[in-house]
Image 1 (cartoon, rainbow over the protein chains, first blue to last red):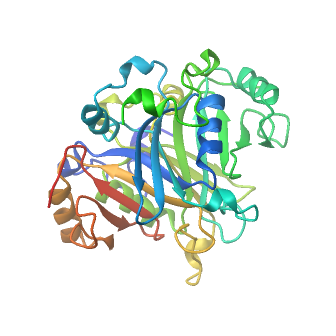
Image 2: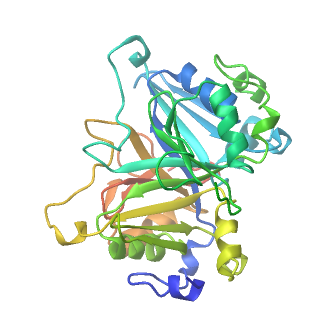
Length: 176
Length: 176
């Protein structure tokens, strides 16, 4: 579908209001049961780097912002500069940890894909989806959908420690 | 907190595996009840541009990818080039519309912020949070939290047509 058809879909404002210049889709926040376990998953399996952490002691929660950058050298070392930098980036992941949930074996968050539904998934695009999935298998990652499952053979879904779904695909055409 | 303290937090892999080079946190998917209404909100209020649409007729759902770019000139016009391009971008929003929900007045998705909780919010950073909030007020946008509500006077939350929360903040320090 040509871009002009997309920008003339019902409801669409074809040319963004100039007032939105500089708006950035900065982050997506998900709650996690055990922060250490989630930090392990997102940094070791997916290559994220934590760049900001804030503890709200009175309200008993902690937030961590993570970015997925190929080169950690782009991350400012100075604290203030790094905080401003991360809030200008697109594609940041915010993990929120409510203190204590990690000690309750029965505690679980809702991933949005059973009733009541809403949020669906995060997606990480990778240069080579077959190589990435082979690596996830080797790391013991849980799959929601392998490339070989179902009819959409070009995408996979893995699950994070809280069972949130993460789609894995590659930008270039891929036919299994 | 210095970056070195963040990368030595429990669980964190300090230096990402070279195999994750080229991984991109590409998109976040949320389900929407009425696609036209959501496209209006995300394009008119927040400045997104739809860049890809796919209709899955048999499974009765449609997906639309939207990007928030200051200059639409960066978006490739060619269909194949644009699809590859969008899958390489960080900070893409995917809307999924299950056909027919828009005709059911009682239908509603779950925004993750009441039980069962999980997903929390999206965040759009803006150059000037006061100006952005004044604009949202003028547009009749629903607020979950105005700048003046509560103790965190530097952030606001608005709600999209499905009641998903969208945090609004500015990268630079702001004291109300």
